[in-house]
Length: 420
Image (cartoon, rainbow, N blue to C red; front, side):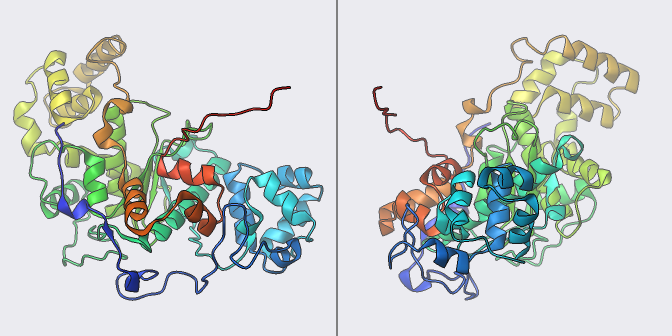
C-alpha cells in the first residue's frame, strides 16, 4: 500500500471575513460571541453558579452524562439528588439549584461553563448512526458513541471557523458542497465502482483509504482507547453538516480489517444516508460495497488462484490491503471455490492465525491509514492564527485533556506529584 496524495485533501486558512460561516453564507456560531477560558471563565469574568443555573442547557447535561457513561441513577447518587430530579433537569422541566451546578460539573468531569446554552450543539438521532457490530453493542455504549460523534462535530465546527477543510464530495450526501450531479446506483457493487470512478481511484489497489476519505471531506476519527471502544467496532453518520466515520483499533487491531471496516462505513454513507440504521440487510450491502470498493471484481478476478493457494492469497493481501479472509470470500463468491472447499480453507487458515504472514498486523505500523485531518487543521490554525489549545478548549467549554484526546495529541508534560 503505497503513499497517495490528493490536493483536495489540503486544509487552508479561512480569511478573517469568512470565519464563523460555512460555504453558502449560513451562520453556524449560534449567534454567541462569548469566549471561555480553560478554567470556565468568560471574557467578562467567571459566571456564578446562579448565572449558569439560569442559562442551563439541559441537552448539555445529557451529553456530558452519556460521555461519562453514567446512568441518571449514577449521577444522582454522586450529586445527592434523586434520579427523577436528574430526569427533570434533562427534560428541561426544572433547572438544577445553583449549588448543584459545580457538583454536576465535578461528577461529569467538565467545566461549569459546559452547561451554558448558546454554543453550537449537533444533536444526533441515534437511530441514524450505523454501528458495525450493532447486535453486540449495548444501548449505553451506543448513546455514548453518539455523544462522542456530537463532540467530534463541535470540534470540527470550531476548527472550520479558522481553517477551510476539504469540500464534502460524496454523491448522495445532502450536505455536500460539491454538486457534480452524480447519483450512485442503489446496487452496492455498482455504487462502489461508480464512486471509484468519481474519485478517480482507478481500478487497482487503493493506498491509504482513510486519507482518500478525508481528502473528500469526510471526517474520520480513531478515538482514544477506553473500555467501551473494545465493543463498539465502528460507526458512522451522514446526518450532520459533515459525514463522520469513527473506526476503532481496539477490538481487532489489524490493519486489513480496519481498512475493510472504513470501506464498510463509507458504504453506509453513500447507500443508507437517509435510512434508519439497524437493518441486517444494510450490513450485508455495506459489506458488498466494501469488497467491491477495495477489490473490484474485474480487477481481482484474474489475480485470484484457480485453486486454493494460501501463499498466493498472502501475496494479494499485501498488494491489495485486504485480509486473506476477504480474499477467500472473494474466491467463493466468484465460483473459484465451492462452499465445502471454502470451509476447509477457513479451517486451515484458523490454524495459521498466529503465524507470520497470517497474523494480524497492528494499525500503528501504517501511519498512512491514521486520520490526520483535524490534527492538521489545528496545526495550521496554530501557525496561521495563533490559536492555542487552551483557547480552543475554552471556546468548546471542554477540559484540555478532552481536546488533546480528540486531536490525537499526547500530553508530553511530566506528571508531578507532591511528596508525602
